[in-house]
Length: 508
Image (cartoon, rainbow, N blue to C red; front, side, top):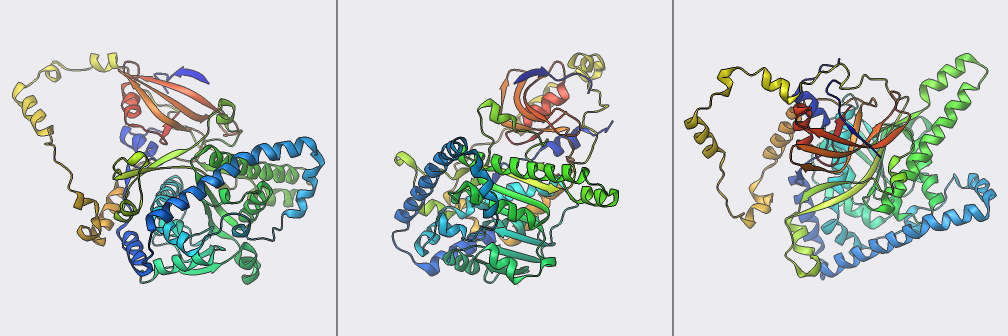
């Protein structure tokens, strides 16, 4: 991992505010929408399930068992390939998977579904909302009308889709083999306004049989927190290939932010990129020029997020795993049924760690890098340009400004956490509009934006960041680079680095 100092000089003449806004992809503390909190409360009141805390704990233990199975899966698969290399030839017979993933993975009973809604649904929603919002910001012109949600569960991704693209959704196909999960998702959406057309299926096979071939393509396909519940690596690859065939534009995969979840995302990332590169090579070797041009336009795939390149993941060589975190304010339902470890008081928030990848069909656009042609002054040069009037300090004004910045400490009122009564849907809409107004910058899909991995380290007047970045203009290769920004050499980018956190973009 290389360590470099950013140069003082780095065309696209972006303003400082636009550059900072474009790089900002993370969200601070997300609050679950009012209508989702009310829907969960209404659903749980109708169920009246006893011993809820015990069932929430049991559901958490079942997720831990799945993690143990996934950790053993990679080693077992590697041993099989070493012992019998020709065994991979038989995999071509498995591209048409016959069993539902719920039959070979984790099945949900009614009591487990209720526990999932009470404890996990807001956290999964927060991760889906964070990923989909970045897709919207990176592709402003993308407004999906037809969506496929594979492994829909109780509808966490569907609720996130409604928040991110509230006006463009026309039809949503949900694939969920668990009848208990399907019933819960339907009850949660009862009484909601402006819903798109929703169809539910228990498998991809039933989906493809019930619709015509021309209707199989979806603008957006999302599979969240589902691939890890499939214990077979072959079945995972089979399902992801089928999902990619059903994708017209964007495919999003989300898994828990664990080493196992990151490994699943990395495997699926490598497989789809390899598969599309192979198609491009075959199209270039074709004899007919017309068909070659036609296939080249429709073939190919590149990463929208989190990677700025389509090469091998550099974190694999570094012995780290790629994941991000979204802080979520706990709902009153979560605080009622969850328990903390060690008997400590339960915090008012939780951090949901997740790994994800978003693909888009086509070729990565060739965009100029954000710092091309930009010149930054050093701190010494900025000081030399100051006029004597700027150095004069009005003591009275400085004291009054310092007093105005002081905010008295107030003990938080526990009632304020339960915002179902105090907030209204109108306030929720206003908050969302304010967020959209702040999104003045746009980070293009070129290779000039790196991704900050882990929290930056601030020491005095310098900031150190680990950035996954593209090393070539076409985004074909990447590396993990340690970037050090000092205030003396570049005060502009130093200020941006101090405000950057884990998951944000960094310009090159």
